[in-house]
Structure formats: C-alpha cells, structure tokens
Image (cartoon, rainbow, N blue to C red):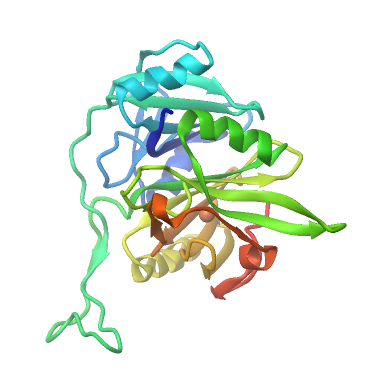
Length: 307
Ligand SMILES: [Fe+2]
C-alpha cells in the first residue's frame, strides 16, 4: 500500500495578495511573490508550505502531501488512473492531482529539490524547576530567517468521516491516532478522527490530518510548527499589537498535546501556531476518545477554533 512522508502545503486564493503576504510575514513565514504566486516557506527543507494567488473570492484550493518515494507517487496515481506530471512549482519534481470524496483537491508530490536553508527563530535554554539549561546568561531570543519550521497538519470538515478516511487510508496510508466517538441511542457514533502518517518505527506527529464528520466539505484550519512556547507567546503579542484578528487560544490540547494559538488571516481563514506536540510511531496504535477530550485542554480555553 502506498504511503506519504508528511503533509507539505496548503493552497488558497486570497482577495489581496500584498495584504496576505504581510500577514504571513508577521505570522512567521518566509515569503516571496513569483508571477502572481505567493510562495511561503518555513525553515525546514521544503520549497514551500503555503501558496496563494489573488482572486475575486477567497477559497481553499488544495492540500499537498509528499509521497514516500517516486514509486509511491506512481502507485497513488494508479489507484485513480490519474497522470503524474512534472511539477511546475519551485523545487520541481513530480506531481499528481486527485479529488477526494468531498471534492477537495489533493496534490501529491515527490522528488522536490530542497531550497537554500533558512534559520528558525529560537530562544536560549529554559530554566525549568528541575533542570536548569541557562546558567550565567540572560535569556536571548534569536529571530532567525523565519519563525515557522514547517506545516504540521490540516483540518477539514467532511461530509462523511468513514468514506473519507477509507479514501485517504488507501491512497496516503494514513492511520487513526484518536477517533472521537459518542453514544447515540446506545450506538457508537464517530465524529471524526485525528490521523497520522504510517512510517513504521519512525515517530511522526500525532495528527497530520483531522477529519471532522460534519455533513459538509470545508477547510477548518492549517497548523504551523514553531520552535517553542516562549517564541509562540512572543509572536502572539506581536500579532495582537499589529492588530490582527485572534481566533482561539493560547492553550494546550489534550489530544496531541500541542500548545496552540489560532489566528485569522485577512480573508478569515484560520491558521494555527503550535509547538510541543506528541510524536508516535505505528506501535501507538489507534484509540477512541470522547468529545470531552477533543474540546478539553490541559490548560487554556476549552472548545474548538470558531469559524
Ligand atoms: Fe490544529
């Protein structure tokens, strides 16, 4: 069965490219505009993790994944008998485009060339109660070339979770980390699931995709990883100061353990900063949890980011 390495990018149309670029820069991405395409990346070795073009209406366009290998890419494309073509985007390589059961455009790439390296914004060591990592020095924040390392996950409202998950499991090899279930008239009902990449013994994020059983197809949010919670909090106040619209947080999720902070971009799409997420390998298996664990937090506000 084919598999993916990780999620790679999310793509949108936006109503004001210059305004969006400014937001993404302030949010911590490294950006450039090439022939009307806004290309944003983090410090990890991917040519882009966010793409946007200007249009009359703001729309979620697609989500991109990296196939485990070129062979996996061809195996994925063969399932739906779709073409594999040269990828015209930065980094090149090969790309295939699929449509999932909800009508979402799913792009799979392989063989991208890594771009020039960037440094990520960090801070010097933490002096925790039990362990002191910064001795004889004041704290120092290093801004780096950008604040964001990588895209960690995306969340989609889907018409039907079971149909959707079966489709992604077959093509992308995704496995369930935590499925959200509730009792309804004595029957177990699924509200969706956090799913992760299957890379055997290798540790991956608790979730790469979270599909919410919602009876509709809609982008919910995309989440970008930063170095640590202090960097996250520092940027939180900088974004507030700059007058951007906050969505939800700061808090720490129960499922996945991420420290989260959700923001609205200028068109109202929700983009998240996160850090300190759980990592699991295939041995973690798949679990069922209740709604209280989905909306609950270790600390911070409970609930889900609003629309
Ligand atoms: Fe998230």
